[in-house]
Structure formats: C-alpha cells, structure tokens
Image (cartoon, rainbow, N blue to C red; front, top):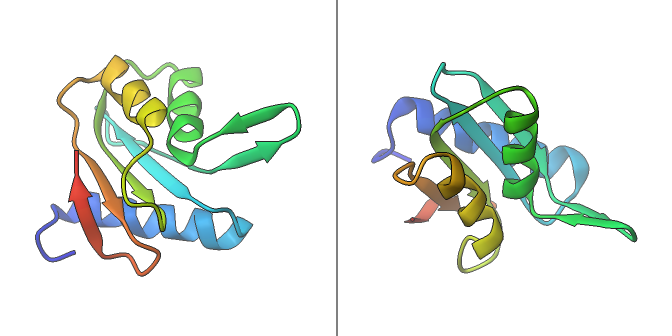
Length: 110
C-alpha cells in the first residue's frame, strides 16, 4: 500500500474489515467528495445479490452523495466486477477504483 494515497490506504483497511467481519467474499469502501466513507460487504440473499462495491455505492447514494473521490474492493477476484465499477462511474467517471487482495495488497487500479 506504499504507492497509495494515505486516505486510499484507509479505504483498504475499512474494506478488509468489512469482508473479515461478515465472512463475505468481498468488502468495499468508498470515500465521497466531503471525505466521508461508506463500507459494505457483498450481499448474497435469495432475493438480493449485490457486490460489495455496489452495496457501498448504494449506501453512499442513499445518504445523498453526489460524487466519489475513490473506492477500494478487497477480493480474491482478478478484477473489479463491471456492475460495481459502473456504479462508481455513474457518480464520478474519473474516481480511482483500487482492487486489493485479501492480504490488503493493491493489485490493480481501474
């Protein structure tokens, strides 16, 4: 995480925490343009499925957020899933979305 902005490194910590606390496949954290953070884990119910990033963006939007500074997904996946990435892009096309492994090491940025 040495290459990350310190505020983005905090997002990694929060996303790892959400994933670990729930035992979910993914954890995500987003930071809005006012510096507030929103954290979520993936949701897998019979009637509702959301990636962690979709859930974090939904939490931010439901709180009135109109823009994001950055997002982080912690997952064993090879890439950020497209629907969650699209949700971030809906709010802020240029916001970086970092993908970190379960160990917290950032592997990619979209």
